Image (cartoon, rainbow, N blue to C red; front, side, top):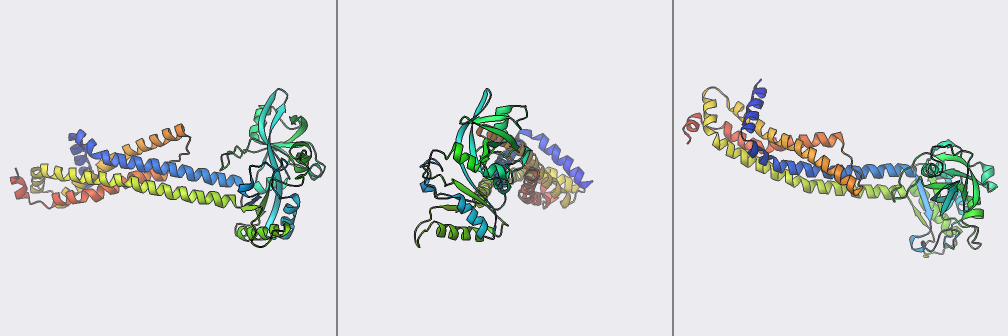
Length: 411
């Protein structure tokens, strides 16, 4: 009952000076809005990266030419890659920490079906690729062993490519043309979304690697006909990834006859670790920005304490009268503390609404991922209440310690 009565009295006091109450809340409003929007952006970025890591598949390692040697072309186009299908087979056969490998090469092509066409990425690879990437089918099937070894003219489509070429019709069993070569569509993959590097993963056509070399990407280049653009490898577990990486490096140096002290002609990377590191940086940056934004909350709390001290002075006779007719110091302290907390909670709620709206609006305009978790909503209001308790304590304490006789004589 005492708390409820204090709440009503505090509410009436705030309503009596609406403009001053609102101006007092401004610091808290700005602080909470800043923190909420920063947390929403940081959480959105973290969720996006986490989702992208999932699309890579677990425990995946990528072997490709060094970055400074790329750009000269892709495998089959005069590229400098010395990676071969035999390298992939040797890795799978000799490194116990590796469960699967998949050599691959890719290029951009125009895929055509009747009067529809789309520019897409064609990947020549083996069916192990889908197991490594943990990429299930939406419908149809993967390549058979016979189709892989016999350079079968079959294709598995990414979901976006299938939609662009076939719309609502069933693509299984239909024929598409890639560089004038007819391919029977045998499968459509489930949706993967955009990769961590901004690549539309569903805008793709997969064909057997031998087919790609003979009929699409590698047929015009006899020098590097046996080379592949990159190799994907899947470690047996996350703990095996570092060992597998070292052993692959040693094995490939031996196979490529790289002398001691010479630089590798390949690069082994762990895409998931790279993205996880990026995630950690963004998380740290998010906390840093939130910490900076929290300064506004402290400034807002100081403003509330200042106004509450003014309010205590203005209402000295009222306080004296309340104590004289029986109110205990605890009741007086609770009333002023309640006023400070209400100011901060109302300010926090308004700041929460503004911060969330601003984050969503900016996210839509700039294309940034935004995620507003229930925890951040509750946390925003809870932090505001704590600010009210901390900065309202001193004025409330001062009011409760007043001598009723001196207070009644106060002019």
